[in-house]
Length: 343
Ligand SMILES: Cc1cc2nc3c(=O)[nH]c(=O)nc-3n(C[C@H](O)[C@H](O)[C@H](O)COP(=O)(O)O)c2cc1C
Image (tube, rainbow, N blue to C red; front, top):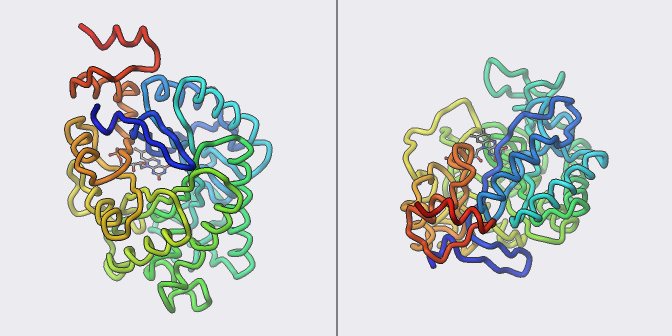
């Protein structure tokens, strides 16, 4: 069987295949209370039924003011736990595993009266200038991530992913372009810029007993930002902290587009971190072609294949990929679906 379809076993996570639904904000929480709705049950349930091994629920705010928009999913209070727990059960019943992305938008919070960041520098002219977090507020933010991880544990998620990419709060602290602080969380050294992410990982690991992933960028595409060498060091530190998987993306720090976007354009960083630092990695970014997707996993360029838009377009991507790749031993979740795979 092609490796992409093979099961994955580790101490903290077992999956029926290596295909992951990347976190994608749906902005469907109309009541603005962060609580998942019937939309989310259908949306994630459909991808579970379609055969995805692991679903990562969209960026879920660890504080109210850390939402990107008012319609984000939240994990900042206990009232949000019961529906999340039901969502977990629902996806489990449909044969998939499910995790949640823990996020804080920082200066990219669009709807709040005040946004917060390492330094008072706006994302772009369309965004408000954020308030600089003081020392106590940084410590409180670490605790918010910890509490969110505790809620994820209570909701019985199989993994959590700490969002440190795409220019959100933790990414803002990592970069000298967005972090101009002079304290122990600031620009004086890479270790200082890493300090918030370090503390968040430590607390989340203490509060969540299963698999802990971190989403990080391979590059910010911004001059004078974190260098490739520095990212390597950050990844080495994350490995030392004992994270389970690194999910490698790129961009979003400033209002700058990547120079070149092509199928598999981000995989080179995932492979670099996997080979040089020796950490399991998920790769993402224009990997919807089953041949390319399978090649990346067979060739051991990455351990997990994450799909965003391909799964928005087609919840049955996994079943379709099995047809395209002529993977005869692949079994869909529902045996009647098997008939849909034969002409
Ligand atoms: C509608 C949409 C929402 C997204 N929301 C998130 C998110 O909540 N968290 C995140 O880390 N990335 C988010 N992303 C990025 C995706 O996870 C993924 O990295 C990106 O789409 C590239 O992968 P793809 O080419 O397979 O779509 C989003 C992407 C899309 C299209």
